[in-house]
View 1 (cartoon, helix red, strand yellow):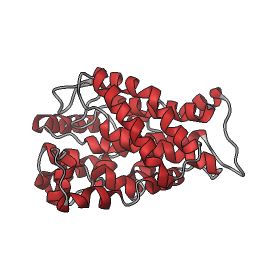
View 2: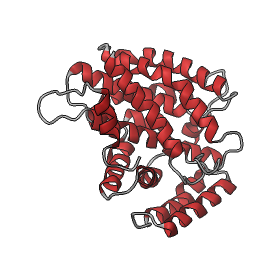
View 3: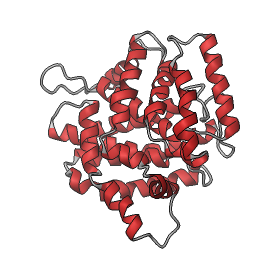
View 4: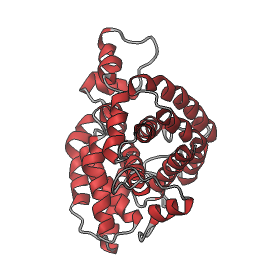
Length: 311
């Protein structure tokens, strides 16, 4: 029971850390609502609070030893309940639908790693998560060409049929490569450089933005914008020296204003930032030096989350 509670706490904290990180180009944060007219900082806090009681269930699917090949129906059942709770809390606004999918898989991965008594690393969590949705894109997306559903297509399904974009499903099926190869190393590097958790999240976000297949950007602008114009703005962010000074923050704010005016919101990257933070904290709370030594003190949880960082 304790492990599922702890993992759920980390998931909730990761949701909140993502929205708190400011300023984020085109995204909801403490300063403004970015490109969104129907939601704000409070909306995200309400959504995160509504989802908090359910993350434990997703972790328990893994902790109970249900194999990756059989886990998806259980995760999806709770996922649908979570979506309903989110929409009720936000008056019908979709704040975290993509994150529910992604983070549920990683919670399962962490829980299953504990069950299997293997080192709980970001990579092991992502590997088990990927096994849950193995073949998902082929089964659920490629079939749209031959057997289109009677219901209206989702934005993601339309983008797959038109451009072959797989979005968060493809990211998960591949084992979260954007998180593992770009987001997490960037977050660790920034923190080791002495940056605050806020600025480290921004530093990681910019790298995620450059490398993830963000269908949210495409659906809110165009494929051409995402493929050819959006990267030029992200590259400006990537060239900012660290740690960020007031000058660098001003540049970030300018791009935030531009994205907000154009209606561009890198929501897919934001979801992967939450996943990055979650996996970072999982590794902090379950360090493995030799053998399998799990932390059993709630005090140690706080200590390992925060350490000497400026949270």
